Amino acid sequence: MTNTKPVHIKTISEFHRTRGLPPPQHPLISVVDYALVTHPAESTAMVFDYYSISIKRGVGKMFYGQQEYDFDEGVMYFMAPHQILRVDMEQRKTAIKPSGWILLIHPDFLWNTSLVAQIKKYEYFNYEVNEALFLSDKEEAILDGIIRNIEHEYQSNIDSFSQGIIVSQIETLLNYADRFYRRQFITRKKSSHDILNRLEKILSDHFKQSGIAMPTVQHISEALNMSPGYLSGVLKSLTGQSTQQHIHDKLIEKAKEKLSTTALSVSEIAFDLGFEHSQSFSKLFKAKTNLSPLAFRASFN
Image (cartoon, rainbow, N blue to C red; front, side, top):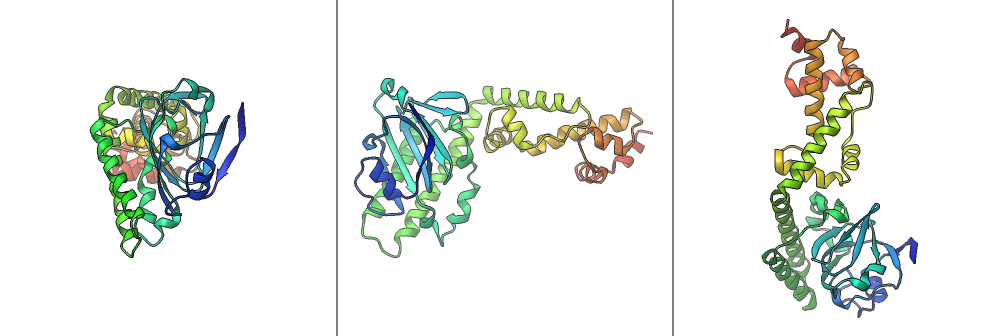
């Protein structure tokens, strides 16, 4: 049976209480042993009001859209406040004994620190479940060490240094995760190149049509069944360019083709490429080529 209405968990204390754990030693930050967490009997969706960073093994099946992903091998994934997670508890019967840890961070803990704004730069908080980070044993050991430092600090006597020390450890953890994601993009080059090829086909097919709005990053990522952030990370690792830059490059390529091989006006070309106003097209074209569309066309005459 599946509970379709998400369970809203607002505080770290509430998470501890509903998961059969003793009260947290700090109300705004907690490291939880995943093996000690109890789960509801039925599959359920959950929404949290805090950040969650986890390394989990043997959690059964998780769902993104209509697809399922088996996380028995152990992965790291990240959730920002107000995101939805659903775990299929029916599959837990065949899963291995769960293990790992969960770091819970309430946004209030970051208040008046540099990380309150910096944490938004880590795009993997917006990745989907199927875009989790697969770690080597060595990488996992590094992160485990940082988690133990965080746990030790908030379990000690809290003083004026505690928040700064813990925040610096969290930032180190996030920077390592950023590095390991870049490694994952590189080591999975075969699948990454497949993504690049599929992107090229989507853009080519799109620009074969006339008068259709220029594709957005969201449109492209949905067509590839990926989050915008993960797609951009893969593309940057391969080409150094974001998804938006790839879209613009393909658009400029098609614009050059039309300017040099047809007698269409700039306004007609702009419309064909999905622009409502030719001025917007001309501005983008000049920004990318240092030439206006007419100046580029003149160079072929």
